[in-house]
Image (cartoon, rainbow, N blue to C red):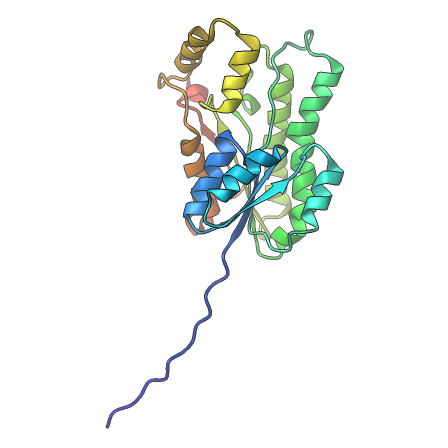
Length: 255
């Protein structure tokens, strides 16, 4: 006697959503592409709307979002239109060269607003969505947040704050969230290209060679390498990783 087994209709699982600040170029763009490959619905947040639209249009499920991470009002307005969020990548940031004596108060305040206040603004405004699903936060800091670098007073201060915020959030929400931090070394990106163009006109190749030599492995890092680590941190295999500060720096901090 044959028995007919009824078919059970299983609804498709809901796609996971990730928001990447500074997603329009460099490391942020690489992260957007990696997560897009994994099936995430990726919200590409950037101050540069055209850049966000370009990246989002190239993804399977990308959405551009205009966001000034240094403005609490802009972040709060952006958050009102997003009800579901699984992953937040705080990536947006700027650099500044100068000793404490060379650093003007206005420049210090700007770098702290963009690099530090932004992590506060964005995380705080999207916290309810993340808590609802035991979401994951990955903060992109820098080796400058864990070691001292000459003529990077404000930048080191800002990235050190990002590392500290990561650890504090991890102990504040040990079971409700996963919070980790990636500290890249010098990455071959528009961020570094902009630094060279601004501070080393006419000696670009020389400075690029010096930056490569500063990494013990003898080359600059690649945005895709940072993105690959972020992808791992977002996934279930990294479920036990919480409050970690991971250096991705070609051996810089080990030397």
